[in-house]
Image (cartoon, rainbow, N blue to C red):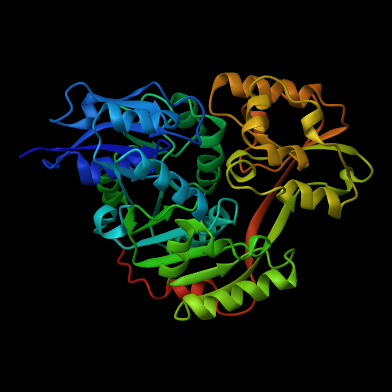
Length: 443
């Protein structure tokens, strides 16, 4: 039997998962490499032999995605599998065309091949785009279930940017856990809120092993998705968040459209700030493409201490990195707070230094935005973010990220934190749909 040579296109997350559940012990394929995109600093590494299994004694090389056409020809690659998320459909087909032109087949793996079944009830929360409000929805679900007396455990979409062997299975319950694991700002943005809720949050590389650990302590598990990726687990209830500020994107992005069409529950978030035409368009697309889904209407309620202190102040707004970069959003909680309370927004691109300049080149739409993306995948990016903030000629910094930046970097200016919580509008609400999930308490 001649094995087919395979490349997995990824961004340090879905690609590793697809490898572990589909390719690792598959005798029909030989994975000659991963390619990496979206996340800075993850190329020129190896997926370690210790995790890769018996067929990959030397590990698997991670290449820049730009090398893909040459790799296909040099390594005689038969199949290329796209395994990362939040891509416009046009870009997916551009990548497919590159692969086909180089002589290989282009594949997308579906949920039947990649979702793992949990032994305890599992609620997945995903979205159609990065920045739709998935995380606030996940935490709302968690609070409701916890208040009903259930032992809730969350599993987060992967962000393994460091030592993959050490990150194989991670569990966070304290801030010290995050310090010990040398978490980046990007990781802290997702783990911090769960630690505040006193709910265990798992993440890592091997989501089969992660699930087994979580099942031992949980009455119910929440899948807290990342980007607009599909759940790694087969859900008992599939909740998907929509963004009326980007109405129509649910039909234009991969795999957000998959989530949209597969959802049991669709949450239309940000209805308090979205244009009416956006909400109308979403309702039309729901009626046409997923009429069986339960629809929940919701607002993103601002949470901010001492908002009056913003009035008349010149402010620099720092927002969530992935949302503002590959998520394509131009604003978030910080901008809404600044406008609502009369602050004067200073454009951040005038002050950027170091690696942030590279980020602005890669995502040129940022030049026209009013928020500074909190890029923090590496210590160097942390330092450049810190220097940019402290260099800015403003009276105050608004932290609109999910994490408290002052825990990560030294900010020398007055500082105010802004965040969102999900607030349902009318009925049905989250409590109503969670009644569909049959949960048994552990003895």
